[in-house]
Length: 484
Image 1 (cartoon, helix red, strand yellow):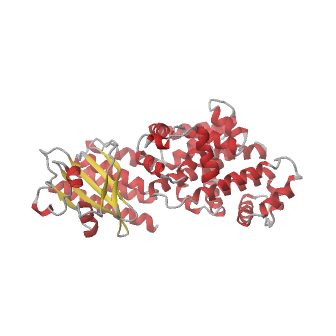
Image 2 (tube, rainbow, N blue to C red; image 1 turned 135 degrees about the vertical axis):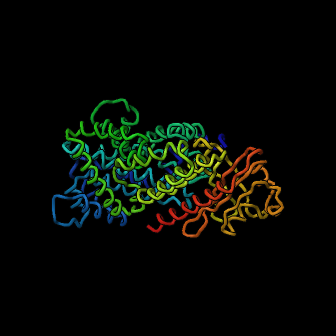
Image 3 (spheres, rainbow, N blue to C red; image 1 turned 180 degrees about the vertical axis):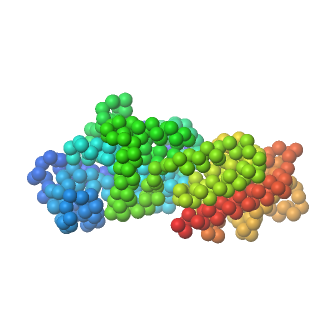
């Protein structure tokens, strides 16, 4: 697999720029022809935009949401260019094509789609946050900072939008620590995402500030700090860091750059969040709104801190805390992976399961594939396997078809004789396994397997009852977030 997907940087850039995202390449080339400061460029740029009806419509919608200085509605692209400035209009066009191009990926696996939309939302939010941090800078510099912050991770975002066999292979390791996951992807593809961002930025002529921010991250200029902090803040809002002090440090650095107190920074962040949601609607990218979250509060960290020492609590208290945390997640997250990974991790810890795995059901329901696994210490494990559902009846097809939870303490038990295929026998080995379907509003999306691998141990009825109850609660929470 590694040899198949490893390519030099230039080849990756060409594949993404010309084959996967040609519309972005085309509009970037068109915009590059027009000077940011030449007023005579406005009629020519306006004419070029009008050739694309969807783009011109988007420009007007965004322009009217951006323009706070006049109550008069902007009805022409040329008027928008005069009011907002030619560089702002160019950034609107580029943002529109990037959002549209990346979201056009078809038949993307749920995990990849979630990764893609989260990165896109984080990037868009980062651009607006960066612009928020430099309110006293001239308009052109604000727009340069916005574009550089928004496109800081364009290499990785573009990669996930390609939706190929390699993305499906790499996403299986998404639960690795962030830095380790980045290195894993680089080792498999032959290129670091940052280098891919630099390559695309140069190909699309996205500005010297972005290239410098990527190529010289150690630079201490205010613009460089702003771009970095905006991306750090956006990521911390999307997935709060383990320690609240990490977020506080980011906010303190931003308050220093803006020369205002932290309370004012927090107010401006909330205003920027509201603007981001409004603008995403104008761009036709409302699907990203769910990832534009409010700043984490003390209660968010209280929940995280309470949930970490589960192994030190009694099983009953640990189970109660887990159910409370899952319920609380329904109010703060729409990300299915948040629920799955938390459930797998805590279930393994509470019941001392050697392996707790989510098996995703393929679209055609022909197979299940292991996606995420935790061990009894709450640590991610690498475990890859695919089991067919077409060749013959087995334990997976049994629980999926009958919508039931089952415990197999011995695969030699006479009651399971028709459902223990060679694949299932290899999976269970001499240990014991619980099977439970994962459902959203009654529709199965996969199966959770909890295993004890030691032949001298069995899964007790009490542990099995807890496991069944946990998965039932998970299914309820997943159905709630989908309805919302």
